[in-house]
Image (cartoon, rainbow, N blue to C red; front, side, top):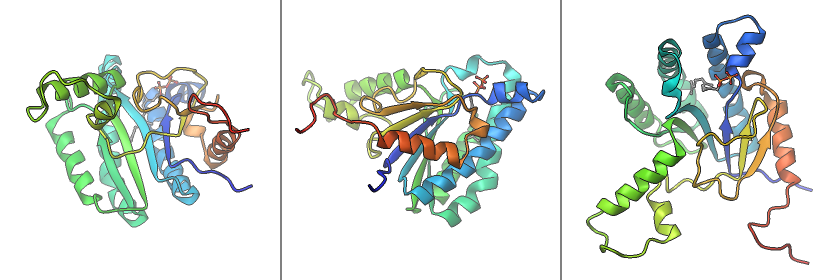
Length: 235
Ligand code: FPP
């Protein structure tokens, strides 16, 4: 039987810190190895024919981490954008950065905007980085956008389709597969609206060690799932 490839895969890249600790390295080394691993998984996504890859790079709660780690993550993200943009263009990667602008430095916001613009016409895959992202914030922002939309009839009942249109990325289909590395069975405020019917795959492997082989195991597991969307299977 032919393998079903999810159109949209979303990944919670957990375990960088534990990976580093086990190797006697500082946490930031783990994040560095994690950033390097993104490239590998992006390439494999293209090979597999995945059309949208979303990764959770920084949550709205990650600001609570020690200042040094937050600064390190910001720098790593900025360096990633600068050093990978040309390769991404060659590979046909359209980049989107999704999340809140609150608290992010102007220089980083500018770099994000420039990199998105540089890659806006690429078509092989959409690489969506959830950065300063929180699922509850996204839903709250959507509600506020609905309330303040002057073109909208006041008091009109809100439908699910309408809420979906006010999310950060209404043009991206919901993820069919959500992968979480490093063993925890938690969603951690990731894509709360969009994952209503996603399949969830958890592996004990730490993110920096999540290679092509592990990725393919997740795809195989997805292929064994019986997706009913709340209905019943046809007899
Ligand atoms: C979770 O590991 C990982 C993060 C909070 C950040 C993810 C960031 C990267 C992979 C690198 C930077 C991103 C880009 C796009 C260049 P953890 O620190 O919670 O690990 P632990 O649970 O083992 O401590």
